[in-house]
Length: 144
Image 1: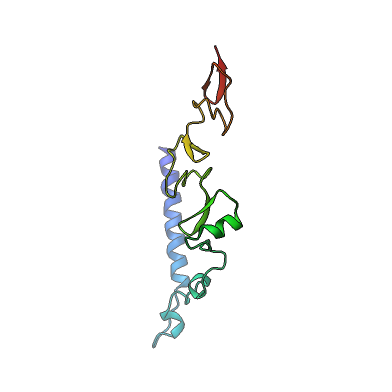
Image 2 (image 1 turned 45 degrees about the vertical axis):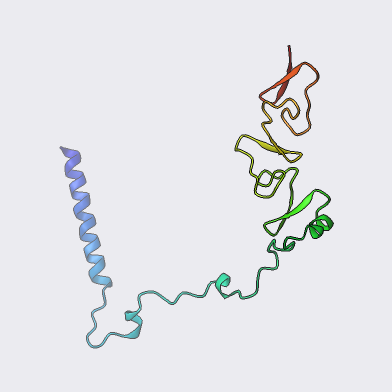
């Protein structure tokens, strides 16, 4: 019962303090409102992204479906996919061909989607082969 009285007194005190603060800070002027009171928020400055009119020089649209440019810039395994140079042998979203995505549990090794946890040709990492008679469990080569 004592705690309820304390909580009630604190809430009444906060209410009175808030009310007094509002009355003190409210201007009491007569006549037409001034221009400063009609706009509650200042004008927002323009965003630098909206003001930018030239294309982004760092945009990745440099190949424009020309594989020769990718070969020169990135190397022999690179191909132009969606105006970007991609290495189809190890890119998970373009594995072996443009827009060929590997599943969540798979990785791209030599242009093929493989499960590194159970594939004995790529056990734990690309190109890590288990020896003859071995099998891959959770990315580790086991021998029976």
